[in-house]
Length: 261
DNA sequence: AATGCTAGCAACCGCGACATA
DNA sequence: CTATGTCGCGGTTGCTAGCAT
Image 1 (spheres, rainbow, N blue to C red):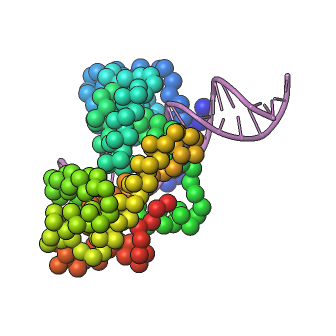
Image 2 (image 1 turned 30 degrees about the vertical axis):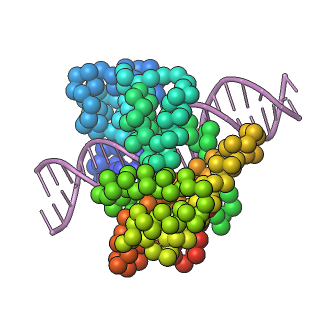
Image 3 (image 1 turned 45 degrees about the horizontal axis):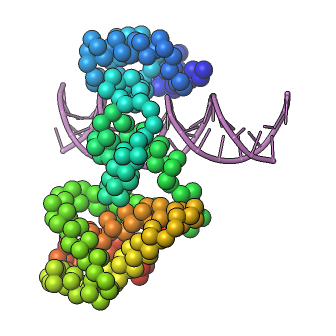
């Protein structure tokens, strides 16, 4: 199909060999060559594939083809309802960390799960204003990710506590419980967050209890999608001591409420 | 039958992390 | 410490089949 000249060379008049990588769909012959390469040399050293097999594909393309399509342990076919449930649960927890989610689904690839999610659950993009807001939130999330990993153990405990709090019948009780659980770190600012989070959670709960309709399902998926962003924000905040006044504690501080897209 | 639209999926791209020289 | 190579990840693009008009 497409055979594109990659401009990694500076021109044949300078004596560089013109390198041509094939792009587009893989042929059966190319697959066969790649499988033979992996049988002989194992996975890895993907940039050697072209040199050792004559395949005109770059290393990245070879790796992707192997990982997403040729690996013998791949499970083909439709995502099962049970797998779907796992994807939903893990996405609520991890967000768009597809490779992390894929590790819990043997035989499924991150690409497959990502495509499945986008096809089945992701709402269509909203207006550009929302997008810029989301970009900022995404940037902030990336910055916080490393910190999150370090404090993961603590967070798990926090999540359990928060679920407990959110199951309380009134917002006032929820706030009170938070003050008991986190007397040293529970700030006024976070009281607002608890209130917002509590409201949002109860809204989505009431929706899910009603007779499902397509519009309500849309709202639910929106909530799941948004819950991840806000939940991450909230959890991060709760893991800091209130004496820490670092600006990163208030990533969306200029907006008085978290952004629900 | 022709055309347009959409969902599903494979593949590509850009970037960052990590390893090694 | 720096440069370079390699790998992995998430976002995006583009092709195709199926369906609607």
